Length: 206
Image (cartoon, rainbow, N blue to C red; front, side):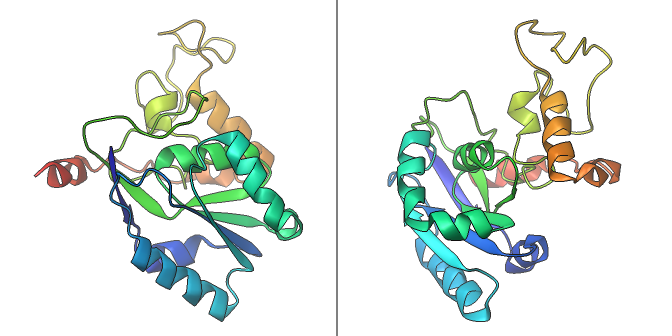
């Protein structure tokens, strides 16, 4: 189970770049999702011309369902530079995998509640840390893709792109580097690391 909360409007607007399509997930009805606030922001972005189209569907964390739903907006998505995703972190990572050549933006932060998350057959997980890092790391979560949950890049134990903790696991930061390189966004790695805000998790637990 999850609590999904919108990031601030200013933060979202600052990340939108070029032609934008919105994908909004309304699956997992047992989680707390700000549907009304999201719908208001969808309308505002459409009316202002900041977004070309909105796809509202469910379970975008399931790639087969996602691809089926995306057919409705194929032309606009092909033309888009940015995909703005309203969902939990699992859904954002699934979209980022599908659109690895586009900037994928997480519009929400995800907080923890006991129980399962998403229905994806993929291996993505969301750390539910309440202060999402996906917008800085190309849609790949450093908390769950890295065995050490590092937020400041590779450790010294990486060997030929593989993790020193789990030899069968690709280094999460190697994957992040490749994704950012493909997007022409390696400059993101030059910025100071975003320090985890553990107070966000503590606040949601109360």
